Amino acid sequence: MSEGGGLLRKAFPEHWSFLLGEIALYSFAVLLLTGVWLTLFFHPAMTEVVYNGSYTPLDGIRMSDAYQSTLHISFDVRGGLLIRQLHHWAALVFLAAIGVHLLRVFFTGAFRRPREINWMIGVTLFLLALAEGFAGYSLPDDLLSGTGLRIAQGIMLSVPVVGTYISFFVFGGQYPGHELISRLYSLHILVIPGLLLALVTAHLILVFYLKHTQWAGRGRTNANAVGKPLYPQFMASSLGLFFMVSGLLTLLAGLAQINPIWVYGPYRPDAVSTGSQPDWYVGFLEGSLRLVPPWETAVAGHTIMWNVFLPAVVLPLALFAVLYAYPFFEAWITGDEEEHHLCDRPRDKPVRTGLGVAAITFYAVLLAAGGNDIIAHTFKVSLNALTWIFRVSLVVLPPLAFMVTKRICLALREAELERLAEGEETGEVSQTVAGGYTESHEPVDEETRYVILSRRLPRPLKSPENGDGDVPQLQRLRATLSSWYYGDRVAVQDGEEPEPESARELEG
Image 1 (cartoon, one colour):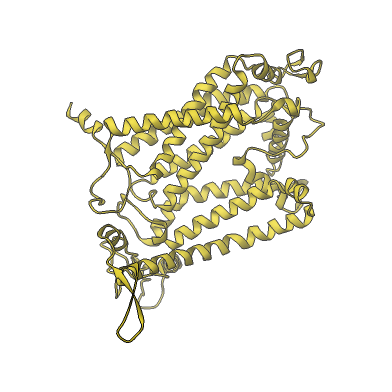
Image 2 (image 1 turned 90 degrees about the vertical axis):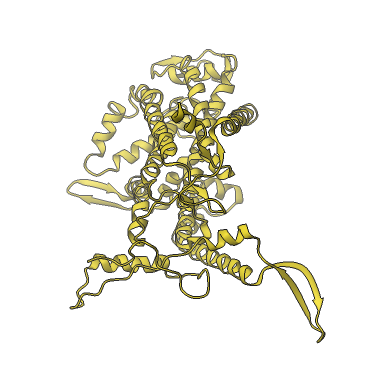
């Protein structure tokens, strides 16, 4: 009984940034509820039928049973279009909330020990959500989703040597085949949702076990957790958030049209929708495919399509590999082996913040490049010139964003220390005896002072020097990266900051 009471009294932080994960959770709940309803009416079959439904512009058109059932849901089932659009909007918000939640965790350092496993679970959830979204997007078998499947088949074929076998297995024969929709349906309603539920459960269990991170402040330390108890305060506010998320999604579904499949028509392999754009979460892949020049190499009778393989296979694998590895990479180059339960302010870790902003800039350029044809048509500019602008931007803007962000973080830190030394400006100006003017200041409040002084940047790792001067290259690299990570520093007080309690020197 005492353990149950302790669980109900578990403290949860009150800051708004910690609600991002809950928005993802409640969007997922809406997805499950609407998805169960849609399964009652959707037919995942590629059987060819002739449409004779309520939407007369398509009357008499041959189409797949999957597309016909989607039209039936939209026009003939009471509330069907609302539920369809609610499901689609919930999917977009679900992925967006996961992405923003991951960014919050990254920029605040909440991925550090002991939460590395939870970070990896979160990245896996994002990856599975991408696959789930693409599978659901492809089920209606309309011209837009079919265009996406055609691109997906091209990506599979770009894999050297085994690409044709992968495509043949996935589509059950020659493209487009007759089995893909039923296979995607099984993945969409059973396999991937089951994995998502299992990982969400594991994620929540670890959150309860490890306790929440919290922002630094008076009374908040690595050894405690300050916030409102699970029952009744947090449960009441969380339930209110669930109703708010559900209500806003329903409002979007009723007022903002999304994925009007009847406009595109049924999928035909010999046709493609003009100006086709995928959902935002795979837009970066579309952009990467449009930016890589037409590079191909013939090796031993095999053609390697670098213009597809690099942007659509290598790039996503590299991005997720970096996401999985980053917590361990940062711990290795900084020598930080301690537990952290206090959130970092982004300005206190300028290199990490700069890397994050550079990654966001890289993604934003690719996302914008995915609509280069629409942008060129709308603004009456050359498509080729715009493509080259995006290519140059992809190389130039991320490093520039890193440098600017790092400088801004250091400048904000210096401004804070100046406020500590001189005090806050009161806006009052007085005249001196000599005829000059001085501005009065007042001391910074204790809470702000505590937050500023509680963050001290450790010194870089020192490279060991052997007697013969022979130092392993890996250790030299580690010391160099540590110096780069902590090299530009703003001291909290006059003089150097103290060494942290963990050993900072590299061991031989």
